[in-house]
Length: 315
Length: 66
Image (cartoon, rainbow over all chains, first blue to last red; front, side):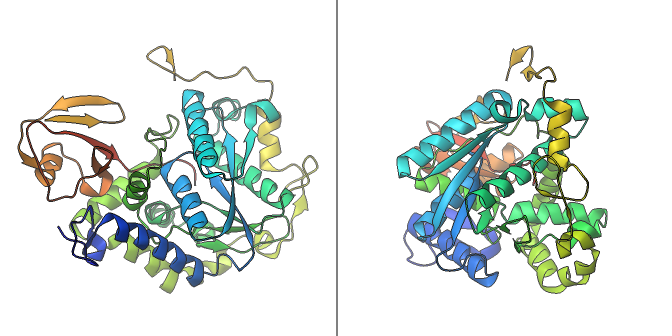
C-alpha cells in the first residue's frame, strides 16, 4: 500500500477516496478537508473567536487540535455531565490535552453548579438520557459562548454523525429537523453561530488522526449511549459503505446540494425569525415561560443522585 | 498473535500469520468501523501479522446526543 501523494508506505486507506496515505499526507488531508468545509460553508471569518465543545472523545479533541494547527483562536469548553467514572476519565483526558498544548479550557460541572447530573436528570424527568444530555449541552454551550463573547460554537460532528442523523430524520420524515440539519446554523438573537468543521471527514479518519497525532482520547463508549438508535443507524450505514464506498458522503452532501433547501419552510417559524419568549429563570430564548433546560434542572435538582453500576460495581 | 479488543476490554489469541483483512473478516468486523493499531501507530490494511504480533483493534464508532 503506497501513499497516493508521495508513493512512500501508506498507513491508512480511505476507500471512498479510493486512495491510501502516509502519515504526513493523511494529516494534511484532514487539515485540508477541514479548511474546505470552513471555507465552503463560511463557518469562521478572519479574526473571529471560536468555542470548541470538547468531550474528551476523538472528534472534539481532533477538532480542537486541527483548528489550532490552522491558526484559529479556539478555546475549549468541557461540561462535567456526571456520568460516573466515564465523565471522570473524559474530563481528565480533556484537561491533559489542553495543558499539554497550553490551550484555554473552560469547564461547567452540572453537579457542582446545578445540583444534578445526566443520569439523575434523565431518571427524574423520564427523558431518554441522550436527549437530556444533548439538550443540556446545547443550552450550556450557547450560554457560555454568548457570555464569553465567542463568535461561534464548533462541534466535532463528523460525516458519519451527520449521515446517521440524516438517516434517522429521513426514516421518519422529521421535516422540522431536516430543515435545520446544516453544517452551519447562523447566529440568531440569544444563540451563537453553530458550526461543524469536520463534516467532510469520516469517523474512522478522526480516530486515525488522533492515533497519528498522539492524542489520548476516551475510547470507551458512553455507558448511557450503548444500544441507542444513533449507533444502530451508523452500523447500518457502514454495512452499506462496505459494499458501496462513498455512500455516506453522497447521502449527506447530496442532501445538502439537492434537498435541504426544500425543507427550509418546515423549520419552526419562531426559531427562524428569532421571535421567541425569554426564559423567566435564565433569560435564554425559549418557546415557553421557562426553557427546557431550566425545567429539567427544576425537576431533577435535589433528586437522589443516580449511581451508574454494572454487575453491582460503580461505573 | 495477541489481539486486544475494546468495549469490553479483552484479549484473544488468533493463529498467525494473517493479513489484516483476513483477521477482521474472521472476527466479523467491518473495516469502516475499526482501526488496527500496533506500537502506537496504524497498521495498513495489506500488512501481514506474524504469529508473535500483538495488535489492538479499536472501534471508531461513537454515539449519543447530537
